[in-house]
Amino acid sequence: MTAIVETRELTRSYGTTLALDHLNLEIPHGAIFGFIGPNGAGKTTTMRILTTLLTPTSGEAWVAGRSVLREPLEVRKVVGFMPDFFGVYDSMKVWEYLDFFGRAYGIAPNRRQSMIGELLALVDLSHKREDFVMGLSRGMKQRLSLARTMIHDPALLILDEPASGLDPRARIELRELLKELRALGKTVMISSHILTELAEMCTHIAIIERGKLLAAGDVQTILRSLQPHRTLEVRVLRGVAQAEALLRPRADVLGVRRASAPATAASEDTTAVPAANVPEKDAAPAGEQPETLLVDYSGDEDSMGELLAALVGSGVTITRFAEQSNDLEDVFMQVTKGLVQ
Image (cartoon, helix red, strand yellow):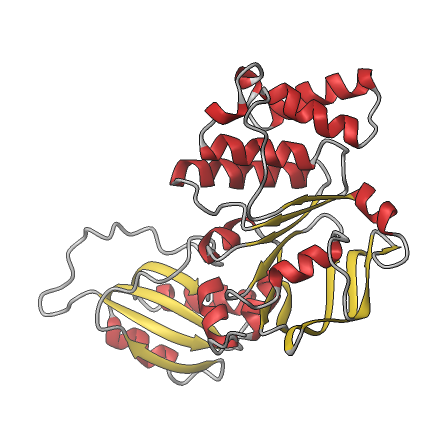
């Protein structure tokens, strides 16, 4: 996958403060790219450089093959930027607001009018076309601002904290809209502190702290790199001791431990192998309580299937067999140190 954004040794200083420290970053075409970091990490500085609103102290950056230093006007044609504090004109109607920016980008009148209708439909604001901007809720203003960033049909959308201040419903609507934009072929770079929401929508992430890039890549690769072996969650209804006796001698089992309570940390999108078809409500034999085993496992998915078959074949009753996984919050806490500028 080719990169739509590339930075090389990108550096930016504010007096004695080093906001960006030789940042080398790539964003693939068609990705939803999560840019993660604490306040003061350099996220907004990076975004402003990529949108030609700020000049780097040193280094270089390219957007769609165009240099942000030598070809800023060309870069602006392929980028749509929504800052964390977006500006709207309260005295304008919704359609007038989009028409204003369409004129600023030199879009022909006929195309401008059709584009306004298409964008309002995309962000679900067609019914607010004749309303004044000042009467919109914050979530609606956010969606209108996003429509404005797309008025010139950019290939790259750069969104700085787009979910800030939104209620839960508006955040869900925004998340679904970003997925739809990706389906339309757009690349989206998004910064946010809401890590759980980024995990649900992002294909790639980068973690930055004090201007330094700490980790970058596709989400699953980064999660796997920080979790070198699998942890299997095996919920045993009957035959716990028998399961342990079968598991411990295996070369691909690095350790087995009983959870003090039924584990619930496995993510819904974990890799899971279908468990034995036994209702969990069935009673265990007298004196035996259901138990959850956490198995540190080095095998692949084929081996996981064989392991499950061996457990079931030996008479162990299993109601859950799934792989636990780190989430973005785990990654963030492992990689960062809580340092600020």
